[in-house]
Length: 492
Image (cartoon, rainbow, N blue to C red; front, side):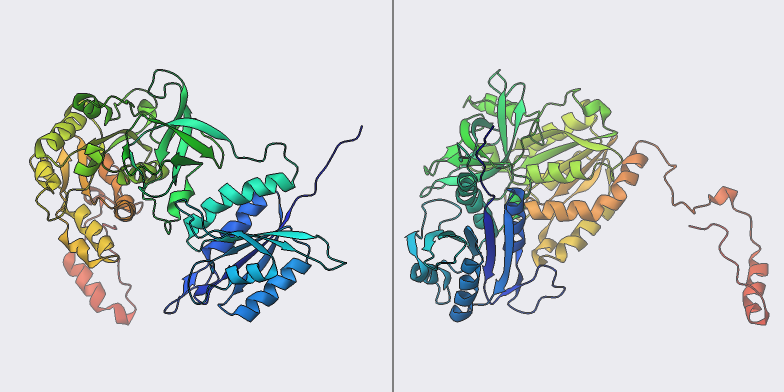
Protein backbone atom coordinates (compact mmCIF):
# COMPACT_ATOMS: atom_id res chain seq x y z
CA UNK A 1 0.00 0.00 0.00
CA UNK A 2 1.37 3.40 -1.00
CA UNK A 3 0.71 6.50 1.06
CA UNK A 4 1.64 10.09 0.34
CA UNK A 5 3.91 11.72 2.92
CA UNK A 6 5.21 15.25 3.33
CA UNK A 7 8.36 16.40 5.17
CA UNK A 8 7.80 18.64 8.17
CA UNK A 9 8.66 22.27 7.39
CA UNK A 10 11.94 23.76 8.61
CA UNK A 11 11.48 27.15 10.27
CA UNK A 12 14.11 29.78 11.15
CA UNK A 13 13.39 32.37 13.83
CA UNK A 14 15.16 35.72 14.07
CA UNK A 15 14.74 38.66 16.46
CA UNK A 16 16.01 42.13 15.52
CA UNK A 17 16.61 45.21 17.63
CA UNK A 18 19.46 46.93 19.49
CA UNK A 19 17.36 46.94 22.66
CA UNK A 20 16.96 43.15 22.86
CA UNK A 21 18.90 40.88 25.22
CA UNK A 22 18.57 37.18 25.99
CA UNK A 23 15.61 36.20 28.22
CA UNK A 24 17.91 34.80 30.91
CA UNK A 25 19.79 38.11 31.34
CA UNK A 26 19.89 38.88 35.06
CA UNK A 27 20.05 42.69 35.27
CA UNK A 28 18.91 45.00 32.50
CA UNK A 29 20.72 48.19 31.55
CA UNK A 30 18.92 51.35 30.52
CA UNK A 31 17.05 50.87 27.25
CA UNK A 32 17.19 47.07 27.26
CA UNK A 33 14.32 44.57 27.17
CA UNK A 34 14.34 40.78 27.25
CA UNK A 35 13.59 39.02 23.98
CA UNK A 36 10.35 37.15 24.70
CA UNK A 37 9.30 36.74 21.06
CA UNK A 38 12.05 34.41 19.88
CA UNK A 39 11.62 31.83 22.65
CA UNK A 40 7.86 32.04 22.20
CA UNK A 41 8.03 31.47 18.42
CA UNK A 42 10.55 28.63 18.72
CA UNK A 43 8.26 26.87 21.21
CA UNK A 44 5.18 27.51 19.06
CA UNK A 45 6.90 26.16 15.92
CA UNK A 46 8.13 23.08 17.81
CA UNK A 47 4.56 22.48 19.00
CA UNK A 48 3.55 22.34 15.33
CA UNK A 49 6.04 19.46 14.83
CA UNK A 50 8.44 21.63 12.80
CA UNK A 51 12.23 21.54 12.65
CA UNK A 52 13.45 24.85 14.06
CA UNK A 53 16.59 26.92 13.51
CA UNK A 54 17.40 29.63 16.06
CA UNK A 55 19.06 32.60 14.34
CA UNK A 56 19.44 34.51 17.61
CA UNK A 57 19.27 38.28 18.08
CA UNK A 58 20.65 40.73 15.52
CA UNK A 59 20.96 44.45 16.22
CA UNK A 60 19.59 47.20 13.99
CA UNK A 61 22.40 46.81 11.44
CA UNK A 62 21.29 46.40 7.84
CA UNK A 63 24.39 44.58 6.60
CA UNK A 64 24.46 42.18 9.56
CA UNK A 65 20.76 41.36 9.15
CA UNK A 66 21.32 40.69 5.43
CA UNK A 67 24.21 38.30 6.17
CA UNK A 68 22.10 36.36 8.67
CA UNK A 69 19.19 36.17 6.20
CA UNK A 70 21.45 34.91 3.38
CA UNK A 71 22.88 32.24 5.68
CA UNK A 72 19.38 31.14 6.72
CA UNK A 73 18.14 30.95 3.10
CA UNK A 74 21.12 28.78 2.17
CA UNK A 75 20.43 26.34 5.03
CA UNK A 76 17.32 24.90 3.40
CA UNK A 77 14.57 26.49 5.48
CA UNK A 78 10.98 26.60 4.25
CA UNK A 79 9.73 29.44 6.45
CA UNK A 80 11.49 32.48 7.92
CA UNK A 81 10.00 34.20 10.95
CA UNK A 82 11.34 37.58 12.07
CA UNK A 83 9.93 39.75 14.84
CA UNK A 84 10.40 43.49 14.85
CA UNK A 85 11.83 45.72 12.14
CA UNK A 86 8.70 45.77 9.97
CA UNK A 87 7.17 49.12 10.96
CA UNK A 88 8.01 52.60 9.67
CA UNK A 89 11.06 53.44 11.81
CA UNK A 90 14.44 54.56 10.45
CA UNK A 91 16.02 51.28 11.63
CA UNK A 92 13.28 48.91 10.53
CA UNK A 93 15.39 47.08 7.92
CA UNK A 94 13.62 43.72 7.67
CA UNK A 95 10.87 44.83 5.30
CA UNK A 96 13.17 46.53 2.72
CA UNK A 97 15.58 43.57 2.84
CA UNK A 98 12.76 41.12 2.13
CA UNK A 99 11.75 43.34 -0.79
CA UNK A 100 15.33 43.25 -2.05
CA UNK A 101 15.55 39.45 -1.78
CA UNK A 102 12.12 38.60 -3.17
CA UNK A 103 8.54 39.77 -3.59
CA UNK A 104 6.68 41.46 -0.74
CA UNK A 105 3.00 40.67 -1.18
CA UNK A 106 1.72 42.84 1.70
CA UNK A 107 3.13 44.81 4.62
CA UNK A 108 0.00 45.85 6.53
CA UNK A 109 -3.16 44.01 7.54
CA UNK A 110 -6.36 45.65 8.74
CA UNK A 111 -6.62 43.74 12.01
CA UNK A 112 -6.09 44.19 15.73
CA UNK A 113 -3.59 43.21 17.01
CA UNK A 114 -1.03 42.65 14.25
CA UNK A 115 -1.36 45.53 11.78
CA UNK A 116 2.37 45.79 10.81
CA UNK A 117 2.64 42.26 9.32
CA UNK A 118 4.80 41.64 6.25
CA UNK A 119 4.71 38.59 3.97
CA UNK A 120 7.21 37.90 1.19
CA UNK A 121 8.27 35.06 -1.10
CA UNK A 122 12.01 34.59 -1.56
CA UNK A 123 13.02 32.66 -4.72
CA UNK A 124 16.43 30.99 -4.57
CA UNK A 125 18.21 30.66 -7.92
CA UNK A 126 21.29 28.74 -6.73
CA UNK A 127 21.63 25.34 -8.42
CA UNK A 128 22.52 23.49 -5.21
CA UNK A 129 19.90 25.18 -3.05
CA UNK A 130 17.97 22.64 -0.91
CA UNK A 131 14.70 24.50 -1.59
CA UNK A 132 13.71 26.90 -4.34
CA UNK A 133 11.40 29.15 -2.33
CA UNK A 134 11.25 30.51 1.23
CA UNK A 135 8.07 31.97 2.73
CA UNK A 136 9.05 34.91 4.93
CA UNK A 137 6.84 36.45 7.62
CA UNK A 138 7.88 39.74 9.19
CA UNK A 139 5.93 39.56 12.44
CA UNK A 140 5.23 42.60 14.65
CA UNK A 141 7.48 43.30 17.63
CA UNK A 142 4.74 43.48 20.24
CA UNK A 143 4.55 40.01 21.84
CA UNK A 144 0.77 39.51 21.59
CA UNK A 145 0.65 40.81 18.01
CA UNK A 146 3.52 38.49 17.14
CA UNK A 147 1.84 35.35 18.52
CA UNK A 148 -1.63 36.20 17.16
CA UNK A 149 -0.15 36.62 13.66
CA UNK A 150 1.71 33.32 14.06
CA UNK A 151 -1.55 31.49 14.74
CA UNK A 152 -3.57 33.22 12.03
CA UNK A 153 -0.99 33.24 9.21
CA UNK A 154 1.94 30.93 9.96
CA UNK A 155 0.09 27.89 11.37
CA UNK A 156 -2.14 27.48 8.26
CA UNK A 157 1.02 27.82 6.14
CA UNK A 158 2.70 25.05 8.13
CA UNK A 159 -0.39 22.86 7.69
CA UNK A 160 -0.39 23.50 3.92
CA UNK A 161 3.31 22.65 3.53
CA UNK A 162 2.77 19.52 5.63
CA UNK A 163 0.07 18.35 3.20
CA UNK A 164 -3.08 18.93 5.26
CA UNK A 165 -6.24 18.71 3.17
CA UNK A 166 -7.78 21.56 5.21
CA UNK A 167 -4.99 23.79 6.56
CA UNK A 168 -7.30 26.32 8.23
CA UNK A 169 -7.80 26.56 11.99
CA UNK A 170 -11.00 25.24 13.55
CA UNK A 171 -13.81 27.78 14.00
CA UNK A 172 -16.68 27.35 16.45
CA UNK A 173 -19.48 29.54 17.77
CA UNK A 174 -19.25 30.57 21.43
CA UNK A 175 -21.42 32.72 23.70
CA UNK A 176 -19.75 35.63 25.48
CA UNK A 177 -19.58 35.37 29.25
CA UNK A 178 -18.95 39.12 29.62
CA UNK A 179 -19.82 42.16 27.52
CA UNK A 180 -17.00 43.13 25.14
CA UNK A 181 -16.27 46.53 23.56
CA UNK A 182 -15.26 46.30 19.91
CA UNK A 183 -12.75 48.46 18.04
CA UNK A 184 -14.32 51.09 15.75
CA UNK A 185 -11.75 50.80 12.96
CA UNK A 186 -10.34 47.27 12.71
CA UNK A 187 -11.61 43.70 13.13
CA UNK A 188 -10.28 42.40 16.44
CA UNK A 189 -9.04 38.99 17.48
CA UNK A 190 -9.91 39.01 21.18
CA UNK A 191 -7.98 36.51 23.34
CA UNK A 192 -10.31 34.25 25.29
CA UNK A 193 -10.74 30.90 26.99
CA UNK A 194 -13.58 28.81 25.60
CA UNK A 195 -15.05 25.62 27.00
CA UNK A 196 -18.00 23.34 26.43
CA UNK A 197 -20.98 23.74 28.76
CA UNK A 198 -24.10 21.63 29.18
CA UNK A 199 -26.02 24.92 29.16
CA UNK A 200 -24.38 27.77 27.28
CA UNK A 201 -27.02 30.23 28.46
CA UNK A 202 -29.55 29.50 25.73
CA UNK A 203 -30.80 26.31 27.35
CA UNK A 204 -28.72 24.21 24.94
CA UNK A 205 -25.19 22.78 25.14
CA UNK A 206 -22.48 24.85 23.51
CA UNK A 207 -19.22 26.74 23.88
CA UNK A 208 -18.88 29.64 26.34
CA UNK A 209 -16.12 32.25 25.94
CA UNK A 210 -14.41 34.12 28.77
CA UNK A 211 -12.09 37.05 28.04
CA UNK A 212 -8.51 36.78 29.32
CA UNK A 213 -8.61 40.40 30.47
CA UNK A 214 -6.85 43.54 29.28
CA UNK A 215 -6.14 43.17 25.55
CA UNK A 216 -3.24 45.60 25.00
CA UNK A 217 -0.78 44.10 22.48
CA UNK A 218 2.22 44.30 24.82
CA UNK A 219 0.50 42.25 27.57
CA UNK A 220 1.61 38.71 26.85
CA UNK A 221 -0.33 37.50 29.90
CA UNK A 222 -3.53 37.79 27.84
CA UNK A 223 -2.25 34.89 25.70
CA UNK A 224 -1.18 32.68 28.61
CA UNK A 225 -4.54 31.03 29.25
CA UNK A 226 -6.13 31.75 25.85
CA UNK A 227 -7.20 28.82 23.71
CA UNK A 228 -9.22 30.84 21.19
CA UNK A 229 -9.36 34.15 19.32
CA UNK A 230 -12.80 35.72 19.17
CA UNK A 231 -13.54 37.36 15.80
CA UNK A 232 -15.12 40.72 16.63
CA UNK A 233 -16.40 43.12 13.94
CA UNK A 234 -15.17 46.76 13.81
CA UNK A 235 -18.39 48.40 15.02
CA UNK A 236 -17.10 50.34 18.03
CA UNK A 237 -20.11 49.10 20.01
CA UNK A 238 -20.46 46.81 23.01
CA UNK A 239 -21.37 43.19 22.32
CA UNK A 240 -23.57 42.09 25.20
CA UNK A 241 -23.01 39.00 27.33
CA UNK A 242 -24.72 35.94 25.88
CA UNK A 243 -24.13 36.96 22.25
CA UNK A 244 -22.81 34.18 20.01
CA UNK A 245 -19.54 35.04 18.21
CA UNK A 246 -17.08 33.18 16.00
CA UNK A 247 -14.05 31.75 17.82
CA UNK A 248 -10.84 30.49 16.20
CA UNK A 249 -9.41 27.61 18.24
CA UNK A 250 -5.64 27.95 18.81
CA UNK A 251 -5.08 25.42 21.61
CA UNK A 252 -6.71 22.54 23.48
CA UNK A 253 -10.34 22.98 24.46
CA UNK A 254 -11.48 22.59 28.06
CA UNK A 255 -14.68 21.39 29.69
CA UNK A 256 -15.64 24.92 30.71
CA UNK A 257 -14.12 28.37 31.29
CA UNK A 258 -12.50 29.19 34.62
CA UNK A 259 -15.69 30.50 36.18
CA UNK A 260 -18.30 28.34 34.54
CA UNK A 261 -21.40 29.03 36.60
CA UNK A 262 -22.30 32.47 35.27
CA UNK A 263 -25.85 32.70 33.95
CA UNK A 264 -25.80 34.20 30.47
CA UNK A 265 -28.64 36.09 28.94
CA UNK A 266 -29.11 38.26 25.87
CA UNK A 267 -32.11 39.97 27.43
CA UNK A 268 -31.39 43.68 27.61
CA UNK A 269 -33.84 44.54 30.36
CA UNK A 270 -32.27 46.01 33.48
CA UNK A 271 -33.69 43.39 35.82
CA UNK A 272 -32.34 40.55 33.69
CA UNK A 273 -28.95 42.23 33.39
CA UNK A 274 -28.74 42.58 37.14
CA UNK A 275 -29.59 38.94 37.64
CA UNK A 276 -27.16 37.64 35.03
CA UNK A 277 -24.30 39.69 36.46
CA UNK A 278 -23.87 37.13 39.23
CA UNK A 279 -22.68 33.58 39.58
CA UNK A 280 -25.18 31.91 41.87
CA UNK A 281 -23.58 29.65 44.45
CA UNK A 282 -24.53 26.07 43.73
CA UNK A 283 -23.65 22.71 45.09
CA UNK A 284 -21.66 21.93 41.94
CA UNK A 285 -18.10 21.66 43.23
CA UNK A 286 -18.52 24.22 46.01
CA UNK A 287 -19.17 21.56 48.64
CA UNK A 288 -15.75 20.06 47.90
CA UNK A 289 -14.00 23.37 48.63
CA UNK A 290 -12.55 23.83 52.12
CA UNK A 291 -13.03 27.58 51.78
CA UNK A 292 -15.57 29.28 49.52
CA UNK A 293 -14.45 32.49 47.81
CA UNK A 294 -16.60 35.12 46.06
CA UNK A 295 -15.32 37.91 43.79
CA UNK A 296 -17.24 41.16 43.33
CA UNK A 297 -16.24 43.66 40.62
CA UNK A 298 -17.41 47.18 41.48
CA UNK A 299 -17.51 49.29 38.33
CA UNK A 300 -20.06 51.54 36.64
CA UNK A 301 -18.40 50.80 33.28
CA UNK A 302 -18.59 47.02 33.55
CA UNK A 303 -22.06 47.01 35.14
CA UNK A 304 -23.46 49.12 32.31
CA UNK A 305 -21.87 46.93 29.64
CA UNK A 306 -19.64 49.73 28.34
CA UNK A 307 -16.48 47.70 28.93
CA UNK A 308 -15.26 44.19 29.78
CA UNK A 309 -14.50 42.95 33.29
CA UNK A 310 -10.73 42.55 33.28
CA UNK A 311 -10.15 42.31 37.04
CA UNK A 312 -12.73 39.65 37.89
CA UNK A 313 -11.32 36.86 35.68
CA UNK A 314 -7.82 37.71 36.88
CA UNK A 315 -8.84 37.40 40.54
CA UNK A 316 -10.64 34.10 39.84
CA UNK A 317 -7.52 32.76 38.12
CA UNK A 318 -5.22 33.83 40.97
CA UNK A 319 -7.44 32.29 43.67
CA UNK A 320 -8.03 29.01 41.85
CA UNK A 321 -4.34 28.62 40.97
CA UNK A 322 -3.43 29.23 44.65
CA UNK A 323 -6.09 26.84 45.97
CA UNK A 324 -3.59 24.52 47.61
CA UNK A 325 -1.79 27.38 49.38
CA UNK A 326 -5.15 28.59 50.66
CA UNK A 327 -6.04 25.22 52.09
CA UNK A 328 -8.43 24.22 49.33
CA UNK A 329 -10.08 27.55 48.46
CA UNK A 330 -12.27 27.79 45.37
CA UNK A 331 -14.18 30.63 43.72
CA UNK A 332 -17.86 29.68 43.90
CA UNK A 333 -19.44 33.01 42.97
CA UNK A 334 -18.63 36.17 41.04
CA UNK A 335 -20.60 39.34 40.49
CA UNK A 336 -20.58 42.85 39.03
CA UNK A 337 -22.30 45.89 40.54
CA UNK A 338 -22.16 49.60 39.87
CA UNK A 339 -20.45 52.06 42.24
CA UNK A 340 -23.44 52.31 44.54
CA UNK A 341 -23.23 51.84 48.32
CA UNK A 342 -26.64 50.17 48.56
CA UNK A 343 -25.97 47.65 45.79
CA UNK A 344 -22.52 46.80 47.14
CA UNK A 345 -23.90 46.26 50.66
CA UNK A 346 -26.72 44.10 49.34
CA UNK A 347 -24.33 41.66 47.68
CA UNK A 348 -21.84 41.60 50.56
CA UNK A 349 -24.63 40.91 53.09
CA UNK A 350 -26.08 38.09 51.01
CA UNK A 351 -22.71 36.41 50.49
CA UNK A 352 -21.76 36.82 54.17
CA UNK A 353 -25.06 36.17 55.98
CA UNK A 354 -26.95 33.84 53.63
CA UNK A 355 -24.39 32.01 51.48
CA UNK A 356 -21.77 31.88 54.28
CA UNK A 357 -18.85 32.56 51.95
CA UNK A 358 -15.48 32.38 53.73
CA UNK A 359 -13.68 35.07 51.72
CA UNK A 360 -15.07 37.96 49.66
CA UNK A 361 -12.77 39.99 47.42
CA UNK A 362 -14.10 43.29 46.08
CA UNK A 363 -12.33 44.81 43.08
CA UNK A 364 -12.33 48.54 42.37
CA UNK A 365 -13.91 51.64 43.82
CA UNK A 366 -11.19 52.36 46.40
CA UNK A 367 -9.77 55.61 45.02
CA UNK A 368 -10.50 59.32 45.43
CA UNK A 369 -13.15 59.90 42.76
CA UNK A 370 -16.70 60.76 43.87
CA UNK A 371 -17.99 57.36 42.70
CA UNK A 372 -15.37 55.35 44.64
CA UNK A 373 -17.53 54.14 47.53
CA UNK A 374 -16.51 50.50 48.07
CA UNK A 375 -14.73 51.23 51.40
CA UNK A 376 -17.77 53.10 52.73
CA UNK A 377 -20.08 50.17 51.91
CA UNK A 378 -17.63 47.69 53.43
CA UNK A 379 -17.07 49.62 56.67
CA UNK A 380 -20.79 49.78 57.32
CA UNK A 381 -20.93 45.97 57.33
CA UNK A 382 -17.73 44.66 58.93
CA UNK A 383 -17.67 43.92 62.66
CA UNK A 384 -13.89 43.64 63.11
CA UNK A 385 -11.23 45.49 61.13
CA UNK A 386 -8.10 43.75 59.77
CA UNK A 387 -5.64 46.60 59.11
CA UNK A 388 -2.60 44.31 58.83
CA UNK A 389 -3.79 42.92 55.50
CA UNK A 390 -4.20 46.43 54.11
CA UNK A 391 -0.73 47.38 55.33
CA UNK A 392 0.93 44.48 53.51
CA UNK A 393 -1.05 45.17 50.34
CA UNK A 394 -0.01 48.82 50.46
CA UNK A 395 3.65 47.88 50.90
CA UNK A 396 3.53 45.60 47.86
CA UNK A 397 1.69 48.10 45.66
CA UNK A 398 4.10 50.93 46.54
CA UNK A 399 6.89 48.87 44.94
CA UNK A 400 5.07 49.30 41.64
CA UNK A 401 3.56 52.81 41.79
CA UNK A 402 3.60 55.72 44.24
CA UNK A 403 -0.12 56.23 43.51
CA UNK A 404 -0.80 53.18 45.68
CA UNK A 405 -0.80 55.53 48.68
CA UNK A 406 -4.11 56.91 47.38
CA UNK A 407 -5.90 53.65 48.12
CA UNK A 408 -8.69 53.85 50.73
CA UNK A 409 -9.28 50.09 50.89
CA UNK A 410 -11.04 48.52 53.86
CA UNK A 411 -10.85 44.98 55.17
CA UNK A 412 -12.56 43.18 58.00
CA UNK A 413 -14.67 40.33 59.30
CA UNK A 414 -18.44 39.99 59.21
CA UNK A 415 -19.67 36.90 61.01
CA UNK A 416 -17.51 34.12 59.59
CA UNK A 417 -16.65 35.98 56.37
CA UNK A 418 -13.44 37.89 55.65
CA UNK A 419 -14.05 40.85 53.28
CA UNK A 420 -11.09 42.53 51.55
CA UNK A 421 -11.19 45.55 49.23
CA UNK A 422 -8.68 45.30 46.38
CA UNK A 423 -7.71 47.67 43.54
CA UNK A 424 -9.52 47.55 40.23
CA UNK A 425 -6.34 47.16 38.17
CA UNK A 426 -5.92 43.49 37.08
CA UNK A 427 -2.18 43.46 37.71
CA UNK A 428 -2.63 45.09 41.13
CA UNK A 429 -5.13 42.38 42.06
CA UNK A 430 -2.51 39.69 41.41
CA UNK A 431 0.17 41.66 43.29
CA UNK A 432 -2.01 42.19 46.37
CA UNK A 433 -3.14 38.57 46.45
CA UNK A 434 0.45 37.40 46.25
CA UNK A 435 1.37 39.68 49.17
CA UNK A 436 -1.30 38.46 51.60
CA UNK A 437 -1.35 34.84 50.43
CA UNK A 438 1.06 33.56 53.13
CA UNK A 439 -1.33 34.62 55.91
CA UNK A 440 -4.73 34.04 54.31
CA UNK A 441 -4.95 30.31 55.07
CA UNK A 442 -4.16 30.96 58.73
CA UNK A 443 -6.66 33.86 58.82
CA UNK A 444 -9.48 31.75 57.37
CA UNK A 445 -8.76 28.97 59.87
CA UNK A 446 -8.89 31.40 62.79
CA UNK A 447 -12.17 32.93 61.64
CA UNK A 448 -13.65 29.42 61.72
CA UNK A 449 -12.47 29.09 65.32
CA UNK A 450 -9.45 26.86 64.70
CA UNK A 451 -6.56 28.06 66.88
CA UNK A 452 -4.33 25.07 66.26
CA UNK A 453 -2.50 26.58 63.30
CA UNK A 454 0.77 27.64 64.96
CA UNK A 455 4.41 27.79 64.05
CA UNK A 456 5.88 24.24 64.16
CA UNK A 457 8.23 25.19 67.02
CA UNK A 458 5.62 27.03 69.05
CA UNK A 459 5.22 25.97 72.70
CA UNK A 460 2.05 27.29 74.42
CA UNK A 461 2.71 29.51 77.43
CA UNK A 462 0.74 27.29 79.78
CA UNK A 463 2.93 24.33 78.85
CA UNK A 464 6.23 26.15 79.09
CA UNK A 465 8.44 25.46 82.11
CA UNK A 466 8.71 28.46 84.48
CA UNK A 467 11.94 30.43 84.48
CA UNK A 468 13.44 32.15 87.52
CA UNK A 469 14.30 35.61 86.25
CA UNK A 470 17.12 36.02 88.72
CA UNK A 471 18.65 32.68 87.86
CA UNK A 472 18.40 33.55 84.16
CA UNK A 473 20.13 36.90 84.73
CA UNK A 474 22.93 35.18 86.67
CA UNK A 475 23.52 32.65 83.87
CA UNK A 476 23.57 35.40 81.26
CA UNK A 477 26.05 37.41 83.30
CA UNK A 478 28.31 34.40 83.76
CA UNK A 479 28.10 33.26 80.15
CA UNK A 480 31.67 34.38 79.56
CA UNK A 481 32.86 32.10 82.37
CA UNK A 482 31.65 28.96 80.73
CA UNK A 483 27.92 29.52 81.22
CA UNK A 484 25.52 28.71 78.41
CA UNK A 485 22.94 31.29 77.37
CA UNK A 486 19.51 29.67 77.70
CA UNK A 487 16.83 30.00 75.09
CA UNK A 488 13.35 31.31 75.77
CA UNK A 489 11.13 28.62 77.23
CA UNK A 490 8.23 29.87 75.12
CA UNK A 491 9.90 29.37 71.75
CA UNK A 492 8.05 30.97 68.85
